[in-house]
Image (cartoon, rainbow, N blue to C red; front, side, top):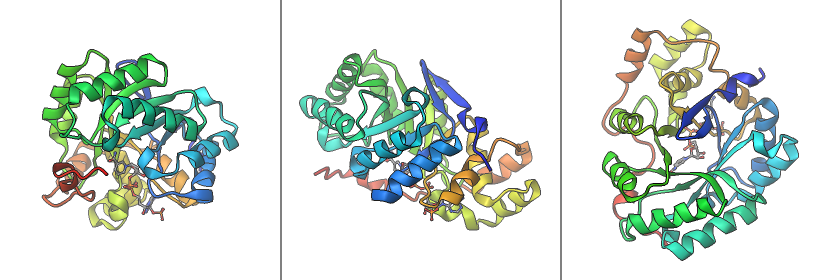
Length: 281
Ligand SMILES: NC(=O)c1ccc[n+]([C@@H]2O[C@H](COP(=O)([O-])OP(=O)(O)OC[C@H]3O[C@@H](n4cnc5c(N)ncnc54)[C@H](OP(=O)(O)O)[C@@H]3O)[C@@H](O)[C@H]2O)c1
C-alpha cells in the first residue's frame, strides 16, 4: 500500500499544519533509523518525530535528505530535554539539534517533559526567543497536564500549538484532549499503539476484522477519527504502509464507544512517575 495523499491530512492549530500521521523514531538508531525515515517519506509520510534525547537526529536528517522529498514538504518535530530548560542552555540545545539534523529550522520544537525545577515562564521565554530567531516555525509542549497547559498559556503570548502526550485506547486522556480543544491546540498521540500492545487486543482485532483492518490500524483510526495526530514507530518497513492506511474506513459511533471503554487505570505504557521526581541529568 502507498501511504500516499491520505497521510498528509492535517490538523491546523494556531497556524501550524500538522500531518495527522507521522513516524515516531524513539529507539530507532543508526542505519535502521535513516533507512526507515527515508522509506517512510518515500511512501508518503510527511511528519517525522524525533528528540535530542533519542540520539538519532543525525540519522533522521540523513533519511530526510536521502528520500529526495523537499524539505518544506516535511513536518519535522524535535524536543528539548528538561536538563536544558534554563534559557541559555535551551537556546544552545536547539541550535545543536539543528546542527545534527542539518536543518536551518524545525517545524515544531517541544519541551519534552515539564521540569518543576526551572520556572516555566523562563523556559517559555527562551522557547519563544528561539522561535523568533527562526530556529523553529512553531513551539509546543509534551507531557503537560491540563494545569500545566493553563500555566504555559498564561506565561507566554507566543502560540503553543500542541501537547504531545501518551494517547491510545487503554488510557483515558479525555481531559487533556478537551483542554487542548478549548485552547485551539492540537493533540499529538505518542505511543499510539501502546508500544505494540494494541496488536493483541481482542476488541480491536474483532472491530478491525469487520473493516478488513488490523488491530493496530483500528487503534490508530480511533485516534485520528478524534482529530488526534498519531506518530507510531516501527523499525519494519512493511509496517510503515500498514500504519498509514487508516483513512479508507470509518469506525461507527458504537465502535468508538466500545474502544473508549478499553481505558483502565494502569493503562499507561510510559512511566509517568518519572515526571514527578525528575532527575534530568
Ligand atoms: N514525548 C514523549 O515523551 C514521547 C514518549 C514516548 C514516545 N514518543 C514518540 O512517540 C513515538 C511512538 O511511540 P512508541 O515508540 O513509544 O510506541 P508505539 O508507536 O505505540 O509502538 C511501537 C511498537 O509497536 C510495534 N509496531 C509498530 N507498528 C505495528 C503494527 N502495525 N503492528 C504491530 N506492532 C507494531 C513496533 O515494533 P516494530 O518496530 O517491530 O514494528 C514497536 O515495538 C516514539 O517513537 C516517539 O517518537 C514521545
